Length: 270
Image (cartoon, rainbow, N blue to C red; front, top):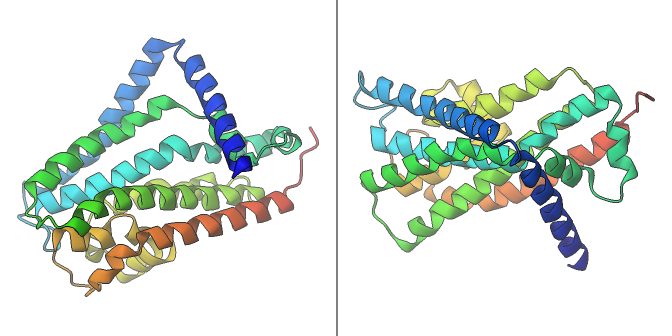
């Protein structure tokens, strides 16, 4: 526990220094924050346009899909804020600067996450959180204690799962430096796909993005129980309690893959 406290304190100090550094350029910060908010809100506009021509999507109405959008995008936004910086590891490997992280007495993931931290990325979470609050109020939900607790647990678990996917896909760079776009397919592409009910996609897409990664537990599985929604996949309701377990398993897998990548790393020598 003592070591964890030291790591947490070090992380806070590094992130605090990065925030103070970014805050020196307030206008740039404001523009980037606004652009992130607008771009993320455009996904919601697409959903609204879609429901202007159809009454439901896979048996889910607008409020239910908006809840799915809110849960998925908020988890993605928080993962983007705290973990997505690991994507830059490919740049450090290519430039030969990754060696600097290995020479310091701190975990490499913590160093990269703190060094590249950008508070302006919180712009992704603003429209997601706003939409989630409005959609939860508009949806016809039978609010029981387990459903109340399910909302924050789902957001926390989804953030951890997205973070794990980011780490695993970024780890590909240790073996194939130019594979960053392939990795983005699973992170950014997976986030977009899971804003919609999983059962509307083809079986191979459901299998890959829903269960292999396993992004279905970020929002779709808990949303089925939360919203008492149309469930053509016949998922048992008890699955709604499993996202925290899936998140822990995903984090352990990500840690193992990242460690394997570190062992396989070969410096450019520059």
